[in-house]
Amino acid sequence: MRGEPDQTLAQLADQSWNEIAGCCFKAENGIHINPALGVTDMAALAPLDFHNYNVEAHWHRHHVFTQEQGIGAELEFARGCPWACTFCNKTLFRNKFRERSVEAVLQEIDTLVSRGVQYIYFIDEIFGVGKNVRRLLEGIAERPVKIGFQTRIDLWNEETLDLLGRAHCISIECGVESITHEGREELNKNCRMETARISELLLYARGRIPWVQANLILTDKDDRRQIREWQENLRAKGVWVSEPVPMFPFPGSPLYDQAFGAPPDEQAWERAHHFYTSTFNHKGYSDIQEQKPMPIEDLENLRLSHSR
Image (cartoon, rainbow, N blue to C red; front, top):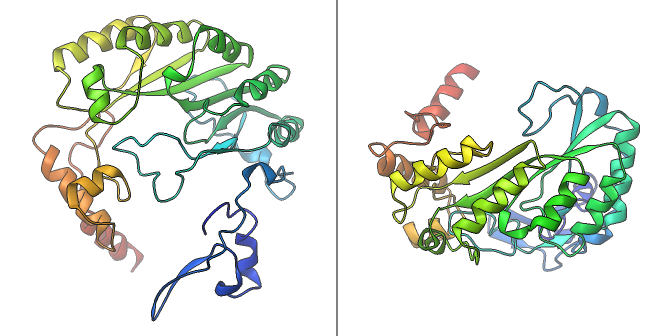
């Protein structure tokens, strides 16, 4: 489904494929794409009322690592991302950035809070980009609910981080990727902020937000010793910093196109996985990854053998 499929997906129940706006499907004579894009106005999507969803049973609190208990939920304020980082596979599915109505999201929050939700994680590709984020956060600050999300620290400053504190934010995950300007340029991060300022804002955020995380990606521009020093300095002050994660050439990402020079096909995931394991098998993976990943084909065969 192209565009915003929230409304058009329901049409699958009683309409044929070629009648649905924005529907793409594979037939015997090739790929068919309905020329109509479908619902494209993100702001026009109505708020969910959750009448048919068992909110009370959802005890998972996404990206919360304390022993604190309570009902969690996930919401979406925006889709897409205006950047084109080399490693990101959002290109084919969530490229263009667009926001929902602040009023609709606040109405969803009110509905969830009335049913006992105490924590909301925003599943946006990147939270903090749009022109209406401040208004949303000011509304959340008036409500008895905590929030978390994924973002870039260079989207924030001291003033807006203070606002996050007032909006009861308890968890942010920040894609820093590289501790050098050259490394961030190699990844096409388009980050105009220097590393010292990034560190400064991460520490400022930690003074207001219980969990602040900085994610790193392994690049040839970063010295391992300098990475360790940067990690240890921030970790000592309460910011969790990941071990550098090797880049996976996700099908649809610029990295995949660079590696294979062709768009993804039916063997794209197998091809990408073989490339990844052959590249990093002897270099090592991050501390949060399986150190001896199995080939996709072996995993598929294992699943088939269990199903029998």
